[in-house]
Image (cartoon, rainbow, N blue to C red; front, side, top):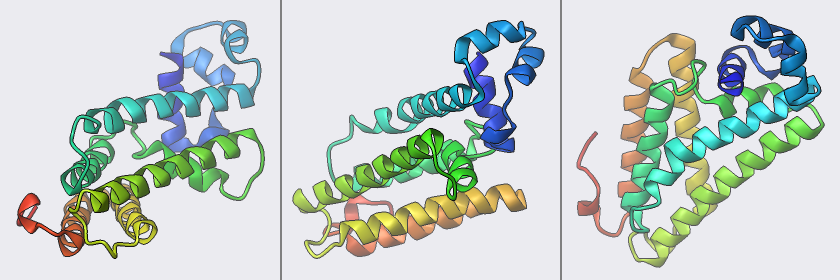
Length: 196
């Protein structure tokens, strides 16, 4: 409960605006009790990032693990990510989109954890692409790193545009662009929907 609220605040206001006192007040807990959980503001920030990772794994990555490797799994992951952002699992959209911007020019443990999490996400998408190539569902000349960059850029753009302009049509645009990109690289277009 404490960390869920911390992640909600951080997704809107940033990790720097988290404080032990604020959480204690909002959740009607003693400040010393909250302090004993984390020990410092950095401890609170690190724990908040870790709980966001847990939500990310449970809501986004784990449900897609059951789908066989290939282009359908890649499409499903992208659609799940768009629903995760659109559904506001965190009120400020994607937790990692917000905190990555906040900590990109800093150093320290919090930045390292956020950067490491982002690297793992990119690697995960690249590996999914490589497996789709390996099972023959994406053309052999597919550059996994470039395609992963394109897909993630579309996901992030949908999240940021939707939040900034309060316009969910960004999700439909991103979904259409992702589908078109995957269809263009697919060896069997019948595996993917014709349109969003």
